[in-house]
Image (cartoon, rainbow, N blue to C red; front, side, top):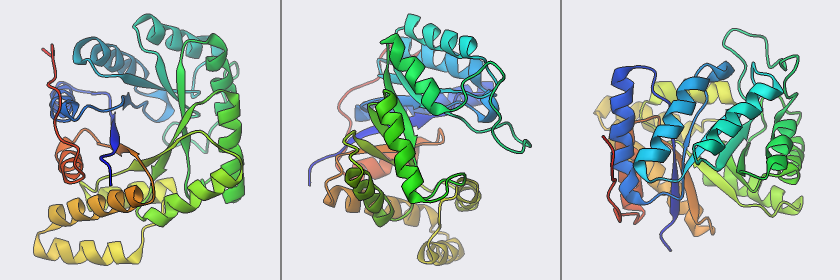
Length: 288
């Protein structure tokens, strides 16, 4: 089993304390030589400016290959493309293009009157600039707004055809979930790489709530295991073992790249990577 390539997702900081946590996270994970790191957008575009600042700073000071999240939410086409141009001017050439989550409390996604109607329009417009490598989201389980898995796969195929070169999946808890999706995509003629999104379980209650919002199924064996681990005070040991086994199972099936949702808490992600044979190879430079 070969050592996988890894990439990491970060949140933009919204306070001074969070800024220190982000830099600690970067310094912990950068030596693992990630293919890229991405910086998220908040629901409803709430961290748009923070994302832009974090991306520019990371790109300038960390030496990492930084991908910026960009969404369609609550912005005109001109505003969205200007943000993309700002990224390009800052030297950032990779974008994770997403429709984006609607603002909290809203009934659902409503396009801006002068904005992109969906992720396909955004991807196409970004591709037309010729300035970016574009990644997109993928859903190994039925998206809450999709009719069935076939619709999931078809929508991903359309996003690839619109100009995306790689997809990153929503998180999942069993390797078979990803493998079935990968097979369905291959059967539909999708040849672009599909990165499995891995969420190390830092906080079991928080992850269960997150899974419910995302439509991610939680297997009974995992629920039972964490109930017992919480009684024994061994949640961290279980989380490391579960995540490492998931990644190992994927690698046994030919997966050679993994994308970790770090939640800006790097220790568990680092420990899992070490267990998979991903060890420090570079040191972070020039971070104040």
